[in-house]
Image 1 (cartoon, one colour):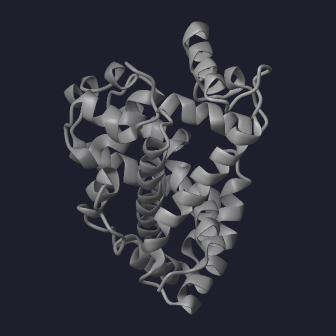
Image 2 (image 1 turned 30 degrees about the horizontal axis):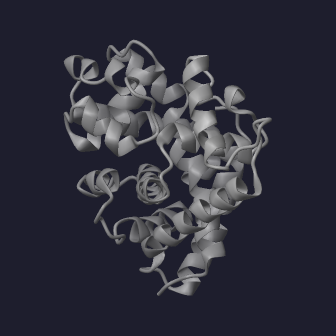
Length: 274
């Protein structure tokens, strides 16, 4: 059954802190231990591993939001140091260890298996069409251990939503770097202050902002116009709409239970300094 958009969006908010432990120190250190040079080597090896040894051009297209050339600094180099299979194992083990560090006793709570089961029921039932990264994750075995299963299922749900988000961006003519600029403005930052793009050459980032300004989305001073704010809202709304089918497999009671049970995990992780 289709659930209210507010609940679908709440699931996005709840799974984000769980899935993104993958990008914290413990998994990064695990990747460094197998020969990765830096954080971004581990990021690309782990996140791209479900695609196999796909070339940089494919990973760039699937991930969508990296500037030209950024992926190629790491792929295929990482595949000379590890394999997709090893990267997947390192990612799962490191992410589970990070969760356990923060959650403490909650990582072994009696209700954890139920949370993982409900999240997995949703995560393995979403449509794969047009969702390359999610489809790659769906092809993997689901971990048996409850904490690892919770991480894996939230990662699948996150990437399912992300694939849909990219489709919405394409449909609205918003490129990956442009999407980061819109996100920066939505949280009250200027483009040059936003972590995902602040490192880009000033001329390159200025050209992106100028392009958005020419489309009437950004003001002369670098803020949102009404049209820009409306577009950002529309993109997020449509992204939620495309994420909704993942939860169709759950009854109303099951989704409500999942939201309630995820709250303490998500709250603790969001408040941590991982």
